[in-house]
Length: 356
Image 1 (cartoon, rainbow, N blue to C red):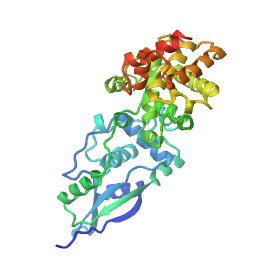
Image 2 (image 1 turned 135 degrees about the vertical axis):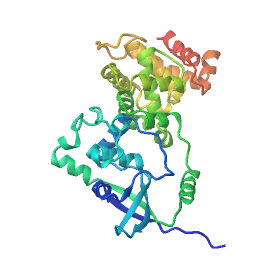
Image 3 (image 1 turned 180 degrees about the vertical axis):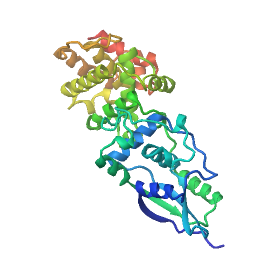
């Protein structure tokens, strides 16, 4: 039996190429076998910002169609990347979409994504910004015309066969594009050198956005106090704060101050303290947050004083005691678990608070 091989062309096309093909009616944007959910306005806004910044995005897959002898024009259909191409065409000129639907295709770039483009149409942008969008280059794989629909489906099944299923935080990252998600992503990214140095997260954890998830939990701590970690709770806060996040500035200020406090007082010791474990780090953060601000305190700017030397000494000695298992049995049990129940976190928090 002869092994099947495919001649896939790997190339680069500009957005202006797709615009030209669409104007010439040589681009098939919605092949019959491809049906994908419609993107939310936030996702579309984020995509345009990605283009303007010149950041990479996943490969676009096209498939050649046999040349139409009546028009002598070659056609291409979008096999994968339909929503990206459709979003960009709608932003540039809605008339490029014969099936344009105002309720699903209309969107604006959000200020939180790009203040230079916020609420502006493509026609209202400067020539330089317009050119930057039109000159953006996609990496494109072009399948030959003889590849049929069944083979396309098999191709993507093969591509996904060795993939890793998205975790809850990665799904949130793909679902939400508003105020809360953007803030959490930026805060977590700022602290990557510390996450590494403190050994809270390894490279794989960071690649899977675990530091973003923990940062989200700290925002939830500031909003509601100590909670258990449930994906449903985190999903809800992303949804509730997507369009309107009035606490953003103060929570960001408090988070940065707490991370600076940990670095200033324990930075060179964190990687060897018991609190480097994620389950314990949460309770340490909650304890220090309570010292400075008070759990469930109003999210108003307030004057705070640095940690006292006695609190710093207590944290260091408590970490050593946990490592040596010289703490009450219920605390040791909570510290040894990997669970993130509210009761477990509160038990460790109360142990730290009792000796403050």
